[in-house]
Image (cartoon, rainbow, N blue to C red; front, side, top):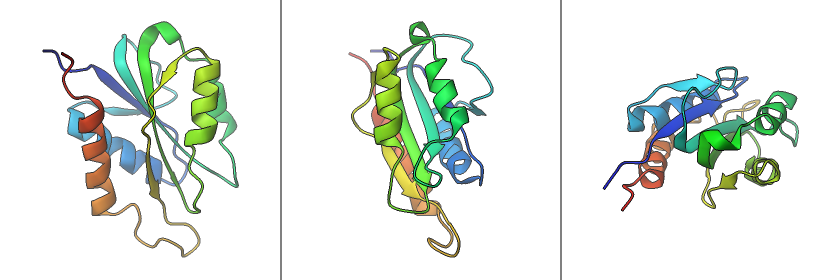
Length: 142
């Protein structure tokens, strides 16, 4: 049995998605890196995080997904944060699939603090849930 190889990339303006990325990476014993840093080697699963800003993904995230090399990963697991109820998964998974890359059907989402809403989020429980998500997504390959 082999453990899945993984990488974590994220785009974060307010630090919420970065905090979740670091929790995911920490659970896997790897480093979370911003999307400005390309993948250096093939991985089984790329954890890709972003936030929804004013109802959509940022141009940086869209451009990153469009530029992904599908030969560098087997699949992408999406995680996201937002101050409102919308998650980035529908938009991100559509773009990832259009790039010819497999997308995990299970995503991770947590609220982030925004204009007085969701104070203190992501919190310790959110980050613990993100770590569990990472562990579940990378369970051993048979």
